[in-house]
Image (cartoon, rainbow, N blue to C red; front, side):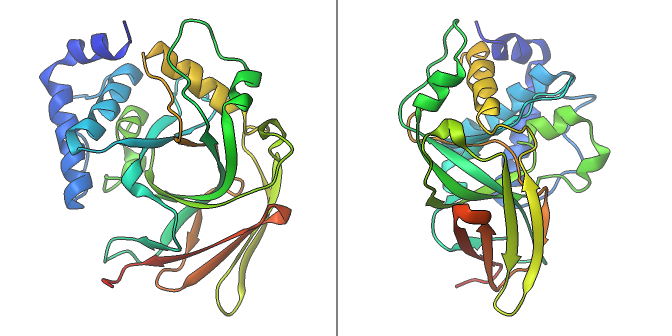
Length: 266
């Protein structure tokens, strides 16, 4: 039995109400001061259980995952919904957004399923399951008015600041196990270079968080599926970029990605 069922049973209707509040926030664009109910969720397991109920309640499918090697007392894992993965050059934001917040990352596309199982997956098995590695930008936002005032479990329930993903072109690698630990990130708009960062992956090896993800999800009775994309951490932290104009992001020698974050109805 996965850990989701006992976590859900422990708090019962309270977690259902919390998940419904996050669904409303996502679908209607409202923000919450916090999740409803006293001290909910009260554990990582309950936070993750709420997170996993939001997608089905909202009618969304999981197109990918964000993850990282978790520090003590945290689980760094959240779904990325299929309808928030953008492969074109335009990404829609809320009409009142005055900036976009992004994290430059690499996104691994899975070639075949990695079902939940008792035996841990190895790094070799994970590398063999990856078909392509793409340039990507995670778009950062949340459903709370003041997220930094809330306990981690509420952030976990909301998907750890994921708003969506811009998926760029695939890069050339000898194999997925050779993903770079460092990438120079350069941002520029139509007129000037905005920032240049000597970027490094926060976990050193971008493959290791996917090994953790596959094995963590297995303990929850959840498998990874062919076609899903997995991101494992920003090479440059969180960057604020302008909206309603083209943005060009270069990932060192790996390639570049262009995107237009738009708040306008078009």
